[in-house]
Each structure stands twice: as C-alpha cells, then as structure tokens.
Amino acid sequence: MNKDILRLYLIASSSSFKNPLKDLETAFKAGVTCFQLREKGADIKTGQELLDFALDVKALCSRYNTAFIINDDVLLAEAAEADGIHIGQDDMNPDMLPEYFNDKIIGLSVGNLTELKSSSLSRIAYLGIGPVFSTLSKEDAGEAIGTEGLRKLVNHTKLPTAAIGGITEENYKRCLDSGVDGICVISAITGADNIEQTVTALLQ
Ligand code: TZP
Ligand code: MG
Image 1: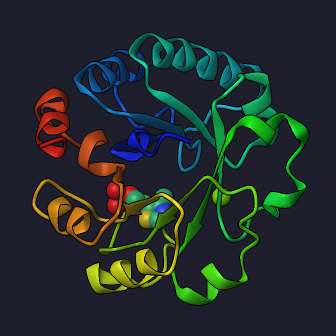
Image 2 (image 1 turned 30 degrees about the horizontal axis):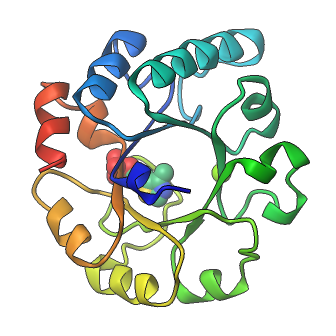
C-alpha cells in the first residue's frame, strides 16, 4: 500500500452530509486522499440502497483518485469493489477475510499496546490509532490516548499509521509530529462550514 493515501482520510456515513455526493465531491476535489464509508448511527441505508450509494461514491473516488474503503461490511466491500476494508478490534479476525481482500487494503483499529500485540497483522496494510483526543463521533471509542500514547504505538509498529479521534485544524499537526503517516477525521470535515477550506487547512 502507498502510505500517501493515509495523508487525509475522511470517514463518513451516507447521512453525514446534507448533500452527500456533492459534499464528498468537494472534499475529494480539495484533496482528501482516502474515504471510508462507515454506515453507522442514525438514518443509515441498508441493502440495495446502500450498495447504490456505495457505487456512486466509488465512482467519485475513482474520478478524484481517492482510495475507497468500506468499514467492516465484507459483502458491501466486495459488491462495491472497494479498494479495501477497515475493521475494528471487535469485528472479524482479519485472517478470516475472503480471498477478494488478498490484494486489497486491510486497515485495523488499535487503541493501546495490548491490542496491537494481540492482533493478527499478517494481512494488515495500515493501522488506525486512537482515539487520540476525545470524540463525540464514536460512543465506545474508549479513553483518549493523547499524542504521547499515539507516539508510543507508532514506535511499536512498522506498518503505515493514521491517527484518529477528535482531530481538528487546531491539533492535527501535533498528531503528524507524533510520526503518523496521516490523520482520519469525521466531524472536522462533516461539520465544516466550508469543506474546501477545511480540507485545504488539514493538508497544510
Ligand atoms: N474510531 C476511533 S475515534 C472515531 C472512530 C471511528 C471517531 C472519530 O471521529 P471525529 O469526529 O474525527 O472525532
Ligand atoms: Mg467496526
């Protein structure tokens, strides 16, 4: 995997934006390097409606050269021919992912050293590390590890890494200074007044 794709990694659901395809296009055009469709929370799509949305997003991603990752949903990732899948500690064992993912990007969330050491990493392409700061976007995100915790985990792995959790225009540089290859954000972009400006700022 080219770790440059982790530089600015946006995560959102189909209901995160008022005009999802338009707003995602704005974000991709402005330079988001990777997008993860994480269909969680209120107002979620399922079945064919979700697949149709995923296919529209995939087309947008292809147009702007943005990597397209699906959170957790193996069947959706295969059906939408995503570039990869992201799994959490409570999801499936990455070793059990079907062959489709052999040449795809498999990302894993880790929040502490115990998780890092106990995870099967043979098929993992990158780690999402956090929450670095406290977040309102994930109820069970766990305790914030701070930039010191982030640095510690980065120093314990050779895998490409992205920081996640509570990352904003004000604190993203401290994450990058901890040695990660990039940052993952939800609310910094989904809640932005001006998506283009925010993406540009987070890429500085
Ligand atoms: N995993 C750890 S923290 C988090 C996820 C999905 C939420 C990040 O959202 P935000 O709004 O960027 O804090
Ligand atoms: Mg999950």
